[in-house]
Amino acid sequence: MQGRVRFFTTNKWGFIEYSLKDETKKIFFHISEIKPAEDGVQYEPISGCRVDFVISNKSDGRCEAKHIRIIKWPEP
Image (cartoon, rainbow, N blue to C red; front, side, top):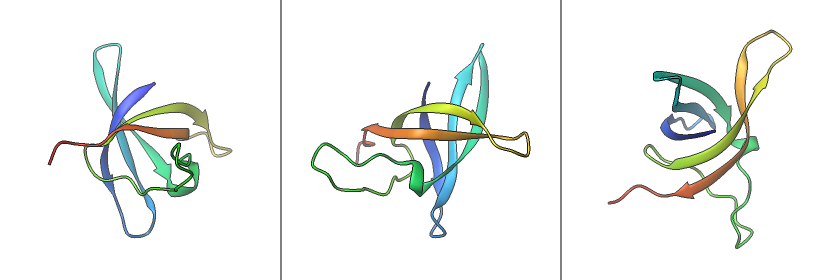
C-alpha cells in the first residue's frame, strides 16, 4: 500500500492516510515500524511524507501499518 503521513507525535506514533476502493482511510503506525533509509539512518517522518507500508492485524483485531518505508519527503 501507499499513503501519506497525516501526523506524527512526539510520543513516536502517528497515522497514515491512504485510499482503498475510492475511500480514504487512516491507519495507526509506530516509529519502530519505519525502516532505515538507504544511508542506514532511522529518520522520523513528518506530515505529508509519502510512504509504502503493509497492513497488519493486531492481536486485538485492529489494524496497524508495518514495514513502513519513506519514499518521498513533502515539498518545503
